Image 1 (cartoon, protein in one colour):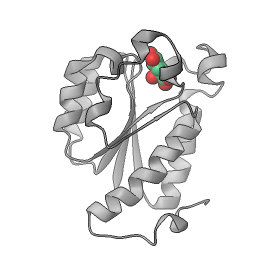
Image 2 (image 1 turned 180 degrees about the vertical axis):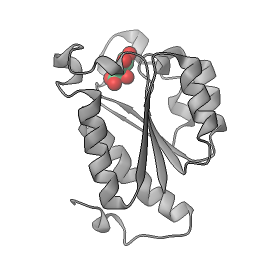
Image 3 (image 1 turned 90 degrees about the vertical axis):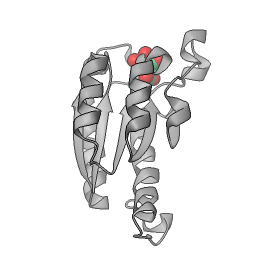
Image 4 (image 1 turned 120 degrees about the horizontal axis):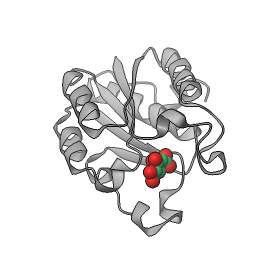
Length: 158
Ligand code: DQA
């Protein structure tokens, strides 16, 4: 099973960027953590980051055979209608992650145009939010593909 791990604008500078809000982990650190957890699930992660909405859309279209995706769209979540359309057209399972609790921040961050077409949204859990998203997504996909798991008790590390 393949799951895309997509990061939008400015997430390439995680670690240096407002660590009091986004944490001190770099994007490579987060990708490593997700990769390790994915291996325990027997899932392959395909990471991708871009600062450009169109490039992210191209990637989603090219990778439409992947069973699922986890995306932190960065600020595109608040206004990226083309990205929303691309995500809506992606047939697999989809989870949105925000490191910070966007609902507790500036008003412009409260509106998430991508969130309504996702299977789930995680916000405010920092890097742990990515693992939470993966741990929810994989059993959901397994069920969808007719491979019921032993339930969450079977999740790695739980
Ligand atoms: C973010 C929240 C967005 O509002 C912001 O523009 C980001 C990061 C988060 O992970 O908390 O770039 O998506």
